[in-house]
Image 1 (tube, protein in one colour):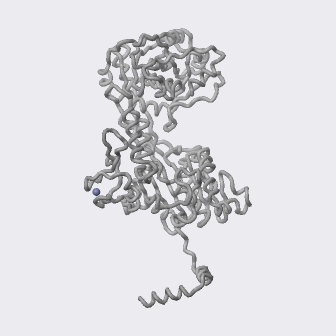
Image 2: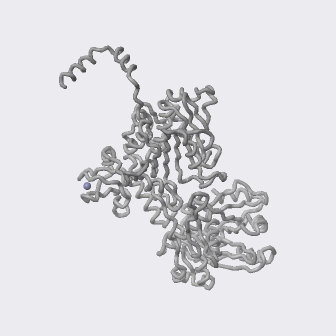
Image 3: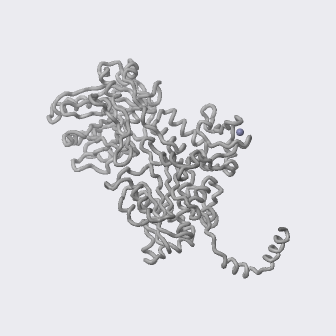
Amino acid sequence: MVRKYIVKKKFKRSWSPLAEAFSRALLPTTPLTISQWADKTRQLPETSTHESGQWRTERFPFIKRIQDLLSPSDPTQQIAVMKGAQLALTECALNWMFYTIDHSPGPFLYVQKTLDAVNVFVKQRFNPSVEAMPGIADRIGTGKTGRGTGDTTATKIFPGGMIRFGGANSAASLRSMPIEKLCLDEEDSYESDIQAEGSPSELAIRRTANFPRRKIFRISTPTIKETSSIEPLFEQGTKERYHIPCPHCGNMDYIRWKNIKFTNDDPKTAMLLCENCGVLIEERYKTEMLANGIWIAENPDAEYPSFHISSLYSPYGFYSWKDAVTLYLKAVRNHDSALLKVFVNTVLGETWSERGRSIKASWLESRKEEYEAEVPRDVIVLTCGADVQEDRIECEVVGWSHGMESYSIAYKVFRGNTDSNAVWQQFDMYISKTFQHESGIVMPINVVGVDSGYNTKIVYEFCRIREHKYVYPIKGDDGWGKGILDRPQKRNKYKVWAFRAFVDEIKSRMYSYLQVSEPGPGYCHFPVNDEYDSAYFGQLTSEFLDKVWSSGKYKLRWILPKGRRNEALDCRNLAFAALNILVPDFDSLPINKPLILNSQPVQRKRRHHSKGQS
Ligand SMILES: [Zn+2]
């Protein structure tokens, strides 16, 4: 053995570089893995969110196994990753795309939520990376169609293949060609059914059927538990988690949020507890720990590999444990369920459950309290939400304070046919009145939101001539992940600013505020007042969330049980939507100073409106 080794070494040395190159040319070339290729060729542009210059897989050690599975030398066909942000998973998808162009050509489809989003991705992420790699740039647009035509925002043609960029909102962009490699990025954000052709993921996956060596890469930050696509994919796969060694005892474990410890609510003190030896590990050990980590599967016999990784793994110098604790504390202190959801989804990379939010009416009613004045001292803004029915208008006036602490001020019902004028006159008189603030100031209602779902034209006309009093029509709409409000770009054909409010998410916010049990951020105060009776609290708590099977996917819906009424909840939601019309950034307002807006002369309506929007 020893002799053989020496001979070989000697023999090799005696060869000239030319001879060596010649011999290498005769050997069959072994294809590189994506990691090997990227470590040699992939350049990150200056504009990269991570580092610029040469890509190094060792900076994100957990990505190596995923890139190896995506490499043609591995037979794996489907890979699912449920993830947090700041983990370079999209860079990994880009590595795969450039590898395909340079090293292993074939038809490739990359999908994001919408065509608009994918266009931005091509311009901001894909193209700048290509410019940083002249070798790749030279190959794009040089297919059969010739340079120029093969290099568009939607399509990149190269010798032996093409990459198409599809939007999950466009069936046409998903079914255009057979695909060998498919990347479904942020799959949880896709609509469940597009243009009556079913799930966009299924539509795209069908295009891969004819390729025995196909690869399907499904990566997503999870969203809502009840409707998530990526969580079931993770659960049914191998369920791999990245285990890293404790620098003190060597115990291998994955990073759990419950083991991130901090003292005195100070994010700077964030450290990782080792469950085995009880030592608190500083974040500066992370680089070494990540480098020595391994993926460990909970279901090793599953049919395809699936991974979970949170932002707590983001390499040292990127997203830190301190950042995670800061976000967490901000959400918890303010009882801000929307922010807590962001934390759970994008930092922990876990789903957020919207269920189990039912609240006892009697508990809320027992909290009624005497106010010192009609409008308590903490109130900065007064809004009114009005629900329009056939035979009445119901409205609630709500006072808002910092941290979304709210004070119910009054609940009124104006009876009369809403096709005729009388009931509207009563309502108008009421919303024109002023309220006595504890500070002594007399306060008007700052903004009124009127439901325009019923008797729409009458509501529009009522609001149009009261725009100077900040009275706006609001139409309730369903759907998750769209925020609170959709702001119109211009007046509609009835010459009003017609707002859309996304009630699913607003109800979710309201119900999380109603659950807050102690005065402070998010807490809802109710006055001792006959208007706030058992019937009111019954309506306020009437709905619950449930998942409903629809078009091949679960959807999360608010359910109103038969025989129950919900006008009080609608009014509260409209008052909250109205607040968001006026002051989207509530915390920018001065503390304990009631907001008094000047009513504007009619000709200055537009300017005054944009002030409200800014
Ligand atoms: Zn340990």
